[in-house]
Length: 125
Length: 413
Image (cartoon, rainbow over all chains, first blue to last red):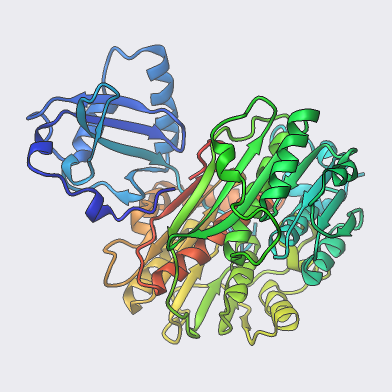
């Protein structure tokens, strides 16, 4: 697990704010999640939570994507969407990190995890 | 008939206790606590046959291992794995756990694993360039990957090395999880399981710490705090020890029927010379936390977690909240002045509790007496280790990320 200094890591320069946004909603700690891409100008003014809702309500999903959405919904039955272990409040830009493809194309990436809290621990289990 | 001690893990779907009981496990240890912690937890899990090559094992932890599980047989050969001929010692072992800190042993064991197709689970903690952390990797023949480079210690021969008991608690829990996966023919992680953070430099002092819940989480939190040097501990729990707790509540081997808080406190005071206290009571709205500097939430229900969150927010106390299931766990911290949200708020516990039908929930809780939830040692051990590490980071002025552990994922956290 990276030891992230979020404020430092998440500071984006103005040019980076014009990049496409890749939003990935991951069920629990699965390796792969549901990926959605937002073009520049389509996400900056919207809250991250709204973007997540939009992504989760996407139609015409492939069978693999449908399975991932089912996993996400299982987690969200008593769980929450978190980004890097924190509540998602505000816009996607506040959570985005700049990455690039192997071909050198830059994009912004926001990983969201659907996490179900665990109840057990000690007193009477 | 199987002993009731293992009842809670036998309830896990697909669990195969038989392979654990009959496995022969080889362990290569070093001059530190890690191998002993692994052996104690392996014994609790019901592993019965271990051969350990290590210069020294911790007498307290090994005594606990032997008292927890009367079928636990340990052959301890004192020494270091510094010659290929020593590999013969492990010829009957199903796999080898390499917890050593010298490259010669790491390389000899990888060579043996490659040549004889014997799985190796390698785990250790380290300090380098101002950072401290841990690595775990499961090597099976065919996994001659770049990750192996990170599994070989820089120093070739046994020498003084960094050791941290709290990181050891986490490493030994993850290595035991991989042990179970290999023995039960489940896929071990195909990633390097890794965690690191800034080196902790501030002295801890002696803060007054309240640990609410003296079950599996509370015990490993207690051990982690004691090994870190904290002495001013108070344990709170209303319950008595049951035989079915003993697959994971490692300090209660001779204490069935006694109060958990009192027993845990007594064991730590006797074994480690602490001066801890016990309160036999439920934590509720009337519990007084004013005199404590930090609170550990090791309880087993969301309702109590909400009360703990609210009280810590009201009194401005640090809260380290941990929760587990058989295959997952989370650690969420609250540092007043720094965090707006409490663990209960962040995890959405109010919504969960509100949606519960109180009567149905009461019936479920009552039914648990007869049909209890499954439980196992590893997630508790790992989560508790992260709880103590997060607390140490908080008092060092760091901001620890919340930890969400999932044993079914390759990356784990």
